[in-house]
Length: 145
Image (cartoon, helix red, strand yellow):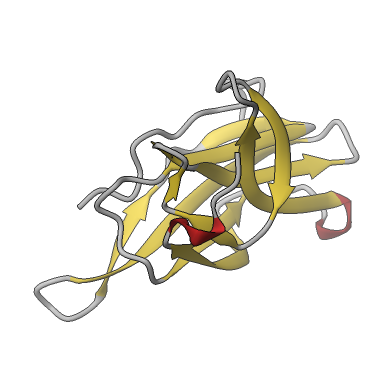
């Protein structure tokens, strides 16, 4: 089963490493991308209740991290899914590390086979755990266009 079909970057990537961004200047927004009737993305809705299927398509959702300074920072994630490994641990999927300035995003797309359960995203800033987001993948009763 796949949780992550696409990880898209909605930011400018830089190749230089950075110094830690202070906690006070980072804003974390988690939610879904809403589309109009033509299928074009038109809005970002903050929520932790993510419909697996939205209309006839799967849902694009994720995290936007915004800094109020121009300092670069490293953004990375680990996704914890409700599937047990052979050793009994929850399955973890590592996201792609990226260097961000001002605003960066980690987006995922649900898959028709995703389980409607609780999931987690650990957010790492400069390779240190900074924030954990608990969210629910749910059936299509939450879906909106």
